[in-house]
Length: 155
Image (cartoon, rainbow, N blue to C red):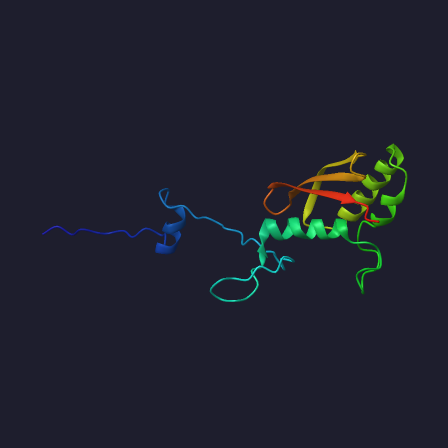
């Protein structure tokens, strides 16, 4: 009769799961979801409540609202906004375009969720207005997006 001696390996089953080459561990970071109120107030056909904006649409809406906000319009944050309304009544020249661009840059630096890539201010003298184009990337997803607004002086 032969005696067979078994030797056990020093690794535990839990250790094998980490050293096995066929299994892969994945680490998934949870992304933060952004929501904002849609100012068009579209109503959901089934639920009957207002449809919120999500993620990149919410950030795009926040950038648009920041551009269109003047100083002292928000009760507890008086310095928030681009304050462009007063610049619409200045002469339409290169100096005013630079002032609008500087105001946009200072206002958009307050939005911490984006990186500003490009700001363009184009004078439309036939329509007495300015076309503002802001291209930015969302920090969380590195997705490129843009907001285009036409500022027009009303009499």
